[in-house]
Length: 123
Image (cartoon, rainbow, N blue to C red; front, side, top):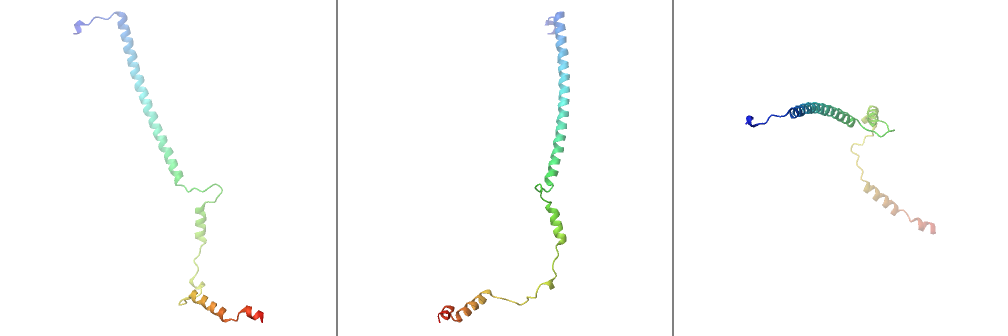
């Protein structure tokens, strides 16, 4: 079949060579662009990872509204100052049992047993 091909004119040969040269240059430009793209994607991935780590670090820090003290400091200070009182500081209440209902009934009975204040004023 190669025998059936017609030879190209000098002008056609030059155009074909120029087209092949342009094609090779385009392939090289494509490979350079793909390399640049891969480098940019890697840099973007690293930058994203760095920013993500910074955000996670900030989220782990305790947040307090501006102008207010750090509450963790206050709780530490309170814990250091807090003392458990000694048991002798409290009165001894062992065995003491009080029924508030019986006390209120006794009060009512004493009121009822007193002479009426209205009758004593009228006399």
